[in-house]
Image 1: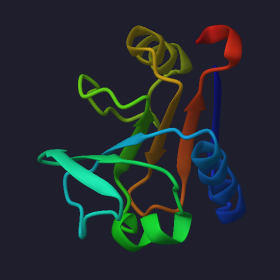
Image 2: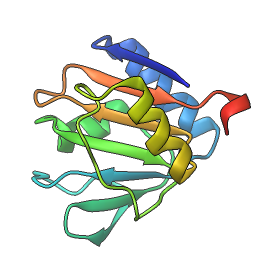
Image 3: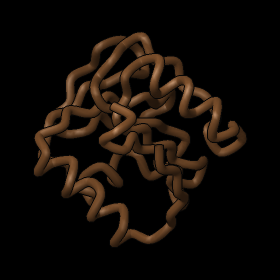
Length: 123
């Protein structure tokens, strides 16, 4: 597993472009979403499924307040937790236990994202 934190908009755009190119659906978890993201469907309160393409500017219009998480593959059994305070071992355990390939956690102001991604040998 790889874990990194970024506030660089270009890195965020590149990540979302790659996930789009790979055709990955995202499951978005956000309790206080100001607006429903485009190309998304409400699955239950605070949870949306979103199909590619994923555009940072488009997502930012509805997720700008932060405090959201996105995962792939889309698994409703996932329970969001604070990855910024969690150990790499805990994150790895959750991701491996559910078979997640990526987990994006946006801090409360949406400036910093913590990205955890399975490497090919861990999926």
